[in-house]
Structures are given as structure tokens and as C-alpha cells.
Image 1: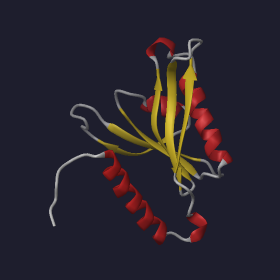
Image 2: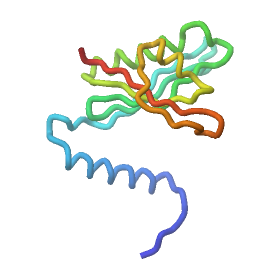
Image 3: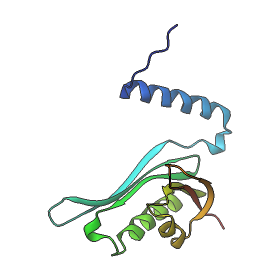
Image 4: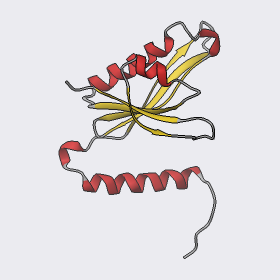
Amino acid sequence: MEIIQQWNQSQGDFIREKLIEYNMEKLPEELKTPNKNISFVIKDNKEKIVGGITGNMFWYHLHIDILWVDENIRENGYGSKLLKKMEDFAIEKGCRLIYLDTFSFQAPEFYKKNGYEVFGMLEDHPKGFNQYFLQKRLEA
């Protein structure tokens, strides 16, 4: 056997699928849910994407991967609207929680303002900044 350094999308997808298969074998049936990617986008009147949010839902939780709004339309509430769309989707699908990460130079205060709580932090990552891990519980 040989270990080879390389990146190939199909091989990366294969490795991911194998881990998902393993994880699914370990879970009780009532927790098994499909692994589903979700996104919402904002388009301007020329159909150009000027904002969006992406996430992945599984095991009755949602991980937000990316939330981005073009600088020209920031401060108009679009970030909160995108976050709310994702939260509503998660609730509709029976998710228990949403979690994400952000950096100190990005938007930790924005997420806190929207009801997310910090549950972890990596200090000095990247150097001179912090990485925050936040969650929002959806069940009462």
C-alpha cells in the first residue's frame, strides 16, 4: 500500500461518503436523516447573485457553511433575512439546532444579535484573530 498526496474531487467525495456510511451504521434508526445541501440566494434586477447562504442538514441539525452579502447592499438587513430563511427551513424539517463558525474579523456580533450563542473559540487563529463556534437551539 502507498499513501499519495493529491487532491481529486471525486476521491474527496468518495472518502466523505465512506465516513457518512460508517456514521450511519452507528446511529439508531430514528436519528438517520438524509445528508442534504441547502442554499438561498439574493439576486439583483439583472439576475446577478449579490448574497447567499449555504448549509448542510443531517441528523436533525443544520450546519451553516457560508453566509455572504455583497458590500454594496450590506447594512440593509439581507444577512438577517438569509439567516431567517435558513432557520425557517431547518424548523420545517424538524432540526434541533443550527451551528456555524465565524472569525473575529467577520461577524460574531451579527450572529449573537440573531440569537446564536458562542460554544467554543480558537484563539489566535488565524494569527492575530479568533475563530468562534456558535449555535442556536431550535427546540423549546
